[in-house]
Image (cartoon, rainbow, N blue to C red; front, side, top):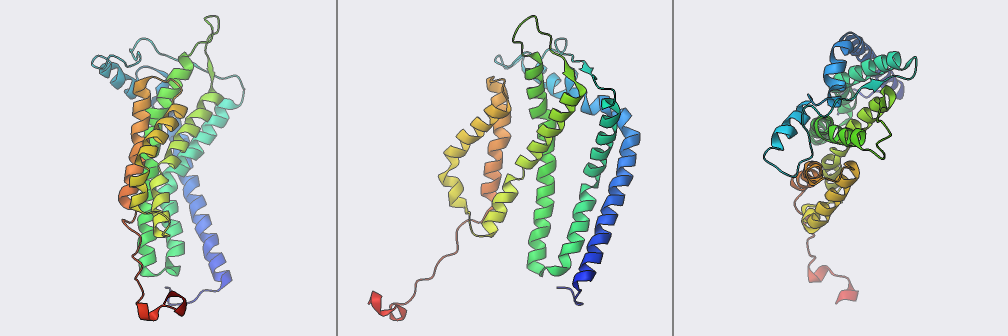
Length: 277
């Protein structure tokens, strides 16, 4: 605990300066993003729209050895993004720069939050929360990477190549592309926080490792159903690729939660109330 007690207004002032420092950091990194976005927009954000994307090239090579893979040949996929609104490109430029700033500032934001709350914590509490911050941050980044390299490309490629009729040509607007891009990657980042949620539930004494052993088969089915909802293509490979990391979250959760609930000591017979005698 902090040696000097702070009043409510002292806490409020400290919180105000914490927010100011975070906002300044976001603005600085957003300015950096404003400079860099024109150079990385095509190579990173719009990369999944062509067959040169690293995931498509990997799957194209894998299809030579795995016969049931969909067609990921390098010449068959190239999508043009359309802009149908006069201000969309400029607003996308601004919003992407801001998103870049927030993403790059996340480690600093976590540090500022930690610096604000840590004086009020005991040593054991501080140690646990520090682990939660670190683990949650790492899992969020991994989830976003899975969303970018696996989930979004597979969904995007299926939906943009799906044809209800030969007379309908698929075209996608910049608004639609960016909305789905942000949503799917953010959703996967949040989904990968599941182990952290189970860990917190375990700390509260609500979930233990036997729960995961008991419902392991249900988790396999649930992961498969969720993967089927995420990847509408329905081909076995896409289902497997998305199901695997989803189920891995269950096993990671089982590994990090407490093993067993604390044993309840039996009372001596002599200490039992008269009704049990």
